[in-house]
Image (tube, rainbow, N blue to C red; front, side, top):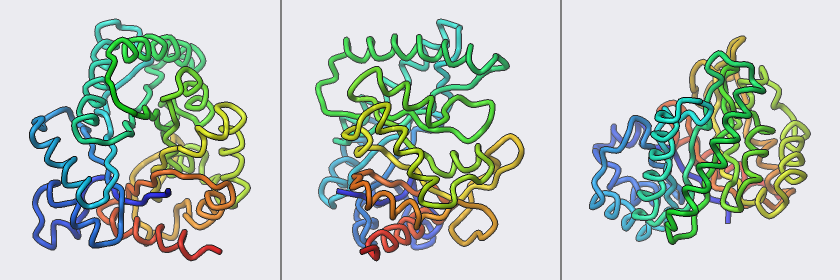
Amino acid sequence: MIRFGPSGNGQLFTDQGYKTSLEAPLWLKNRGLNAYEYSFSRGFKMSDFTAKSLGDACKENGIEISVHAPYYINLANDDDKKVEKSFEYIITSLKYLKIMGGHRCVFHPGSCMGRDRKEAFEILKKNMEKLVERIDKENLGFDFLLCPETMGKSMQLGTYEEVAEICTLRDYLVPTLDFGHINALTQGSLKTESDFKKIFDHLIKTIGLEKTKKVHIHFSKIEYGEKGEIKHLTFADNEYGPCFEPLAKVIKEYNLEPDIICESNKTQAEDANEMKSIYESLK
């Protein structure tokens, strides 16, 4: 089953008088959407009670909820204390995900911090091995997917090749393919179906077809410069890509079953509806 929905709440949600994320699931259901990503971008300010209430509202309205771990995670750090904090951010995000009744947790892998990229990635891989050992010992007791995200700036770690390699460590590691990020990092390379197929073919070769079918997807148009991502745009932008239609055709051809989360700037629900319409129009 393919699901479509927004990351967070956009301008239309606010303009219509809605105030809290607890109101989002019914609002999304009434728009024909069935996915929602809640971001702990700046940390954990949500009570367990509110998390359970949000999860219950999602279940009642047929919305699959995912979470995004805090943005300041960096698993390419060689400072043990800071790495430990990153571990805690991810594990705490997973615990909130369990309370909410969701299954997918997205996180940013890390950044080079002025190091050579190969050296930084080796540090990241060693810390990822420690992280999954910690997660295994936690015995969280629910079916989850931990989804490292492809990143959009040259100083960040998270090309689709790097993310695929990370995801070989455990069955529960599945990529988040942020195609806006990939397009920004590669200076607008995603134009044709073949451009998208290249990415999925690499994943199938590296992590296998079954895991590739379950990928998490972030999608938006993103302005970029020499160093990659600058800012998120809306689908109304005609200068920057990528366009969703060639990706939709590849998803259908490859029989993939992702959750597709729209991260457009303030129009994420409307643009999620547009993606859903494009996909459903394909024969």
